[in-house]
Amino acid sequence: MDGQLVEIWRKLVSDPQKSWVLFEHGTCVVLPQPGADLAAQATALLAEWGPVHVGTDSADFNLFEVDTGPGWVVTCHHPDILVYVAADKTHTLPSSDIVIGLLGRSNRDQDAHELKVAHVEDRRP
Image 1 (tube, helix red, strand yellow):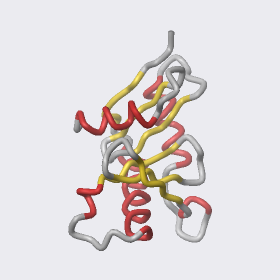
Image 2 (cartoon, rainbow, N blue to C red):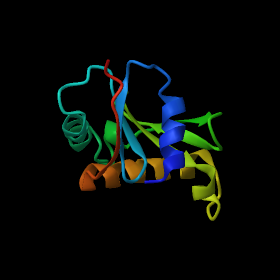
Image 3 (cartoon, one colour):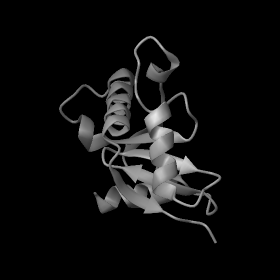
Image 4 (cartoon, rainbow, N blue to C red):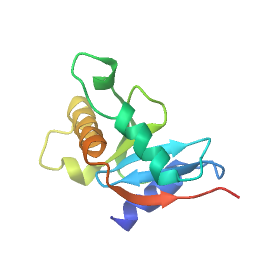
């Protein structure tokens, strides 16, 4: 896992009370009410809410440019599942909102199917 991506998520999830789990392709699951096993909790959430089904709410997204690094956060139909898309990941593509959003959505779908945890940020006291 890219340590720079972990640092970006540390800045993006600025609430010191919110634990989060990062998956292999950049999907972050924020856990405002963390359970005993953060990785298992995030994996279950992503398995249920992460897959993309075209023509449903799961395929919808919004994106926001962030100031923690050159890139965007792509949201989905679940408020605690987010994907960071770095600007350097779009250098071979036209960087329009739709292309960035589709790339983020694709990464979320891939993470939802593979479910490979890359980092756990445990912020519980």
